[in-house]
Image 1 (spheres, rainbow, N blue to C red):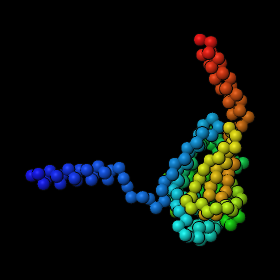
Image 2: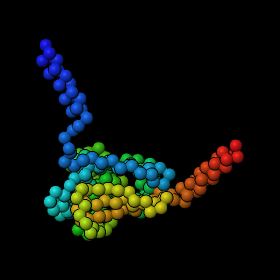
Image 3: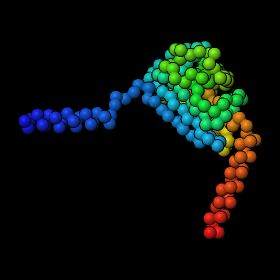
Image 4: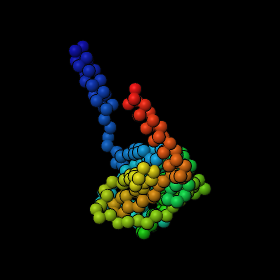
Length: 200
């Protein structure tokens, strides 16, 4: 009976231990969320590694649609309407895809953000596409990475890099003048509230 209880305790302990851990993913999932203008932008994507492979032009063929990451398609969510590389995109969630060439990438936002890879990619579902130059990195980027780099309080760059390549898509609010006016009014309100608190 004691042996049975000990075995049961060990099994329960092992099960509890296993619940807290998992096998490392070959392409770990990354979620990025950042304040942008008056809302935020979030990105959910898989991060494949170079692992000694030739990436662009071989693993990721030139001239073909790529999921911009690994496994399920990369999802990007805008909390407000944005100017995406010069083109207006309504607030919402989109699939992010890339058609790479050696010197430039076509970066695509597609209505279907729930597909696996780019196997069912349908160009009829494209919302916008912008073509941006590719720059060569000084140091290799081992793990695929998407980041958001602010340039001021109402603009920034979507930066995509892997291996020795990097591309950037400029972002700003679709109606910048309106956003600045609203932002100025909100700052006035905050100042009034702060002054009121000091007096009381």
